Length: 189
Length: 189
Image (cartoon, rainbow over all chains, first blue to last red; front, side):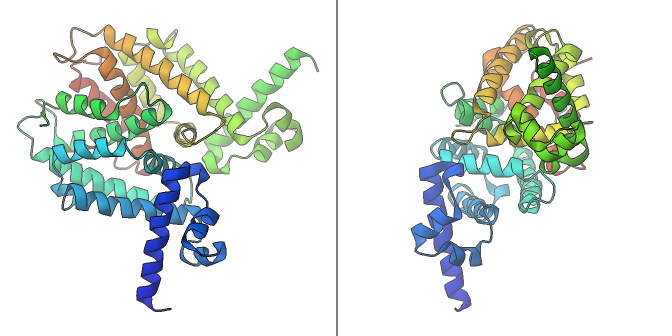
């Protein structure tokens, strides 16, 4: 198989995985179900993605790329309003938010295959968030710095996702994130 | 076996699980390892806790009880300073924080055995946090309410734990939580 065909195949597997996650959630997503969707044997799929964690990490990487294309050129170029829009969008895709939440938390365990991905992703997202807040430095509460606030902003996003997944009737991610922006003195449009 | 002896046995299994979690982390903790520590066969232990999730949920319930005994009579009676102390304390017990993070996130999946526990725990913790913030109502930023801020405070705690577990050199939970209190206009001692 040529390298280009291999890349095409990987792309279609990841797309199929998005569909299966949306329909069946994290727990219902198996390598077998994704293989079936894309017309491969499970053995054939494991040639590209040896474990469920490998496949789901590829799904999350692809989501990051799409989100950046939609919502900002790169994470440092995303605006506060685009980020608020992204939170609204996430409220419409429970399966992928669930997958993110489960896999990110699972990656903190010893020798987890996705640990490096999440470690590096959080370092990158903190840097991007710091740059975003830097552009609002004059609005931030006196004495607080973008470097201090960036991990808090990310924590709010992750923590609200968890509470929303457990209790969507009681927890509103979009309203919560906007309240947090107000605490920072930033007014979204 | 009498009911009292059964309860004693459960208590010693949970204590042994704390030790194993502290030594080996979430991934290294198995029913077999805990059974071994407490002098039971795995089959014998499964009489009390049929699955790893059941045992770990009991560990987290026990942690909640201990923390409340140490840090406040009940969650609504905990003060902001006691909560900041609890964050400091959590920074010294990585295994249990890791266990909490993994299991809470995992519980958002369909039919997870710990789902009800976490759903109910978050409802209770949000209510307790709302009462705590109520006692600082005069200090809170104009226009914000304890009800709005309670889920954010919990999100900050959970989200900082995740980032700290992935990158303890870069993320300081204690400093982060104190920065959040400053945003709320609350000065811890």
